[in-house]
Amino acid sequence: PLNSTKTNMIAKLDLDAVAIHQLMSMEKDDAAKKIYLEGHNYYDYDSPNDFSFVSLHNLTQSHTIDYTDFQAYRLYESYFGSADFSNDLIIQIFERSGPFISTTATQRNLALNVAISSFVSYMSALQALYFSVSRCASDVTSAETAFDGAVALLVGSVEGRGRGGSAYLEGQMLYSVSKRNCEHFHNCRGRNAEVNLDIVRVMEEGQSFLKQGNCLDLSKAVESIDSLLKVPLIQSILYFSDSTISMQSDDDAAGYVATMAALPILDDIDSSSANTIKSGMDLTASTSMSSESKEDTVYSALGVVFSNPDTQGIVDCE
Image 1 (cartoon, one colour):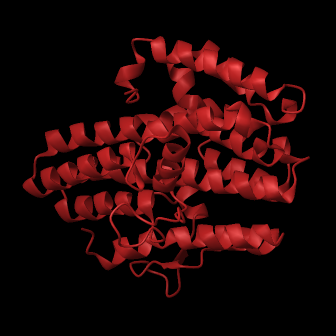
Image 2 (tube, helix red, strand yellow):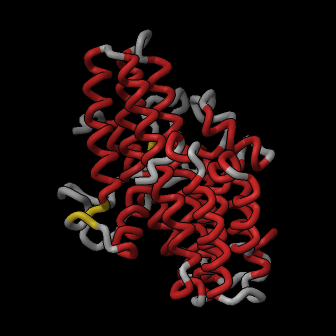
């Protein structure tokens, strides 16, 4: 149960993602980029300015986000060599530069969807969760707002009020990625993903710990959520490297972005396997590798990662 006006407004950031997707599908890239940079649906009533929309772009900027002092952020910043790693990738998609120079409009649209759900939603939710832990003992009100905000950033508003969310998979945040993945892997629970049910359960536990002032157990709950959130990221690599999917050229750029979203995690476990996966899903090399070879290459490398005894402590492999 999320009751604050601000939390409900944060959830509406995924309406910006919906608008961006619709505009990109009409090849109105400049209008889509404007919404990404300036915002359209989330007005920050706490801002000292008279008129201030919060945008998806704001969530990617190291100088505008509230908290970066947690391991995942440092890991991604180190891997990509930039504090604004999410924005760097998204701007390349908009501007058809870097690895996206030869991509089609459809490819860039799908790639942008993945970038928002697997980079922006994922990292901004983690920022809110770890900020909540940092304020648990000193500012409970701020901690509770941040914790509820993390839920909003993971689920968004498009999923609606029904249990499990929209039956039509309309969401644009990380929650929707899990739902799409579970359809592919045939392990949905009702109309939701099993991992989403686990995330919601631990979120509810964490919210309870926070209200009780139990900061130690809150911290443990956030670590569990962090582990669970990595699941859809790695599932997405399996999905996009599947030979039945990877033969569809429209998905090439989306598969590349999904891979980049998980590579810092994989590199931290086994850099050699991460490099193999990166090569297998390289957007510029997608036409030179058959879909079967891509699948074999990526699946074998991920098998090495899963067999590493350190992996279970980082991502919920079950």
